[in-house]
Image (cartoon, rainbow, N blue to C red; front, side, top):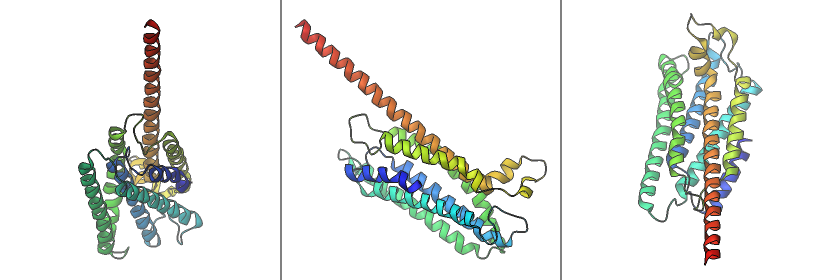
Length: 263
């Protein structure tokens, strides 16, 4: 379902021959969020055999666990392919220099993000090592929430670069609608797929939803919900702009007709 929802977007960009209308910053952020999700699944899978208490990943991993991992990987690969297209295709023929510079910065940031993850994996060593647990907890308690917040901000970048109606636009109501529907289904389904064991809900008197649910399993639901909301807002913005443009055009046509009748 995730891959299918990206096909119209790929096709539109390749047909248009341009990435106009797509924010490099927004697409980069979505890709990096998917990479952080992949890193989180890596730590969950590697931690499972040595955890004293149950965690959301079974030992050995169940069929559901492998399907969840496949979903995370597909989402990351699809977002990475979209980023590659946005980087490769020209953005603007009017002022290409700023667009090229922003794309170079995006590539450097993506490479840096990947290298940091590789270095953290190498430094972490074995699951029983202290440094591994420190890195895993930093990812769960700091990095994952940070990128969740960044994902919420990314759509402001996208809204800023959306071109007026009538100009080349890599977005359409169909691509936005498919992404909204897909991310919404994922947000709804994740709480039933990545489940927190009952014993992990109990940790002192603090709210378990903050201490246990989000760092271990809630991130998948929350991230996809934010992506769905963002795509839904962009869809409404796209439709409202198209409607306003149609109203203006019809008004101009009436005025021109009235003017010709008076002459």
